[in-house]
Length: 285
Image 1 (cartoon, rainbow, N blue to C red):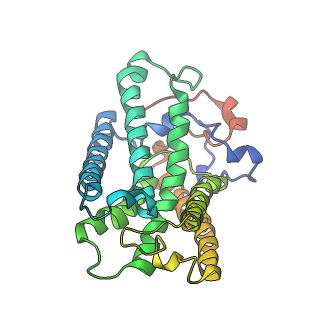
Image 2 (image 1 turned 135 degrees about the vertical axis):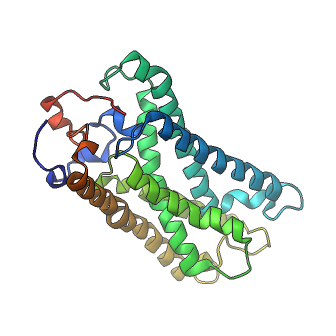
């Protein structure tokens, strides 16, 4: 294994870095610091079951006739973000189950041998979207939208706090690579919601109380300029969050683990396909 510092292996971003290739499949199913596969699987299973259980409970209670949201449940960015987090966790759980049940016992060691590799790339894309959007939702809600007594505290904790906390845990716990140019994925997600909000207003959509907007700060009818400007700021903000917080914390994690736990990098050269010939990728837990 090369003895050069992993925290210093920075290179100029390339167009190929927008893509989802060039990494060992092991990063999707292992933690940055070595952890037994069974423990990591238990973590994935418990958090996925909790998130899914609460989502189903809230959906059934709030969408039924007389419920808080009725048919308006899916118009809110908060709920889009939670669903994104849930889909990511389900995908991550699927991948580690496949690894523990089939890949590891069969001794697969290179990404050429790994079945269902598109699920790994899907997990990677979902994580890039989810982490930045979750942190943005938490900041926007508690910084601009929160009104004491408006929502149930347990709902606020799950939909406006837990998502951001889980995103931070994932950044430090998972061995998933985070590239700076992957800001394109949360950008596309945020832009898609802005387009949806604009179309929803244009066709006369309302919230569950009959107001002609989804969020009061996003009232295109009352102040088109302000709402449009805020939309642009939100889309730019999610890019900044990806670069400064998500990618920045990932680099901080790499620096800390490189100095304190060099053995936490069993796959030293996974960020660039150009370095792949330096050694065969190995799946380890």
